[in-house]
View 1: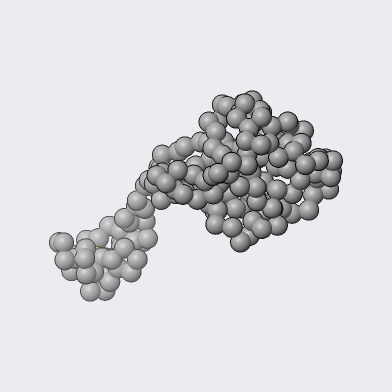
View 2: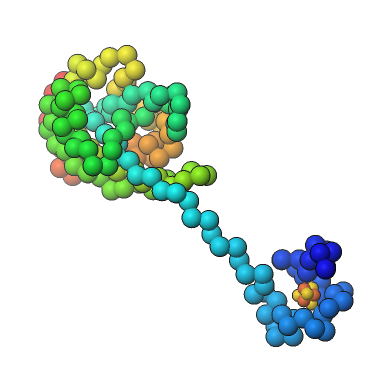
Length: 179
Ligand code: SF4
């Protein structure tokens, strides 16, 4: 019976004409061969959610190097926050940044092989480069250079979108900020 399954009754192309149990096969008799075997249930992957601080000044964005261990280890990326953290407070407390505008951008969904990730970008446009955001391990990347930068895929996509010309209020604010 195991040989029958392995050699004749194949999932995609059963060889019913050669099958010794064809006369008794309910699937064949009822024309439901395509219904068997039922598709394997989809594996539900664990889900994680994070926020990222998207600190912008002019047409530049702040990056920091991620720890060597963990996802995106050693890559430059946006600072990671917990979903409930107040991005403006973190921006002020950690970088002593003067904020012009703070908004939450639409979530990004990203799939890894072993879990799915929802990323909520918290945009903080700052008035000038904060001194604390110019220390080792920190980088201000011109948005025009995003395409060639080694960044995690969903972060690169987000920043490429930010690099597109904008005519809305946030686009105008870029013209108002001063270094
Ligand atoms: S007759 Fe039934 S058991 Fe035999 S190969 Fe076709 S589907 Fe499989």
